[in-house]
Length: 240
Image (cartoon, rainbow, N blue to C red; front, side, top):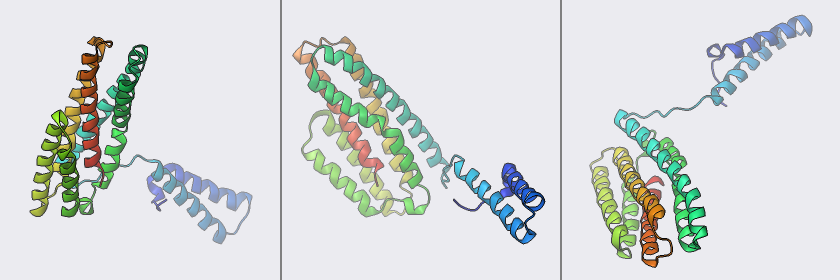
C-alpha cells in the first residue's frame, strides 16, 4: 500500500487519536513511543482506505476516454446476451441431440462472456504514452490476420478483410507518430457491434429453425462460426 495523507480520511485520524489516548492515559507509555505509534496507525488506516477505493482511468485523451466507456458498455451487453443464449441453447440443442452445434455455440458464448474483463485490462494498459502499440506490434497483428485470411472463406474472410484495412490504417497512424489508441478502440468497437448483430441472428434462428432439418442446422453452424470468428478478431485486438 502507498502512504497516504491521513487528513483525507477522518476515521484514520480518529484511530490515531484513540491510539494516542490509550497509550498515554491507560498504558502510560512515553510520548516518544506513543506519538510515532499513533501516527503509524493513522497513516496505515488511510493507506488501507485508499487501497479499497475504486480506481479511475487517467487518460490524456477525452475522446479516447469516452470511446472506452462506450466499448465497455457494449462488451458488457454482449456478455450478458451471450450468457442468456448459452443457457437457452443448452436445453434447445440437448433435447434435439445437436451436440456438435451446442458445443460450438457454448464455446463462442464463453469467450464473449470474458470480454468485459479483457476490455478492462486493456483500458488500464492504455494509460500513458508507454501504452502505445509499436509499429512492430501492429505489423505482427496484421501478419496474423493476413495468415488467417489465406485459409478463410465466406463471412469470416470478409470480416478479416475489414480488420486488415483497420490495422493498415493504424500502422499508417503509427508511422506518422500519432496516437493509435483511439483507432484501436474504434476497431474493437466495430467488431463488438458486428458480433452482437450475429449473436442476435443466431438467437432468432435457434428459436425459429427446425432442429431436425440438416440444412437449417448447417445455417446455424455457419452463424456460430461467424460469431466465433468475431471473438477471435477481438481477442487479437485486445491483447498487447
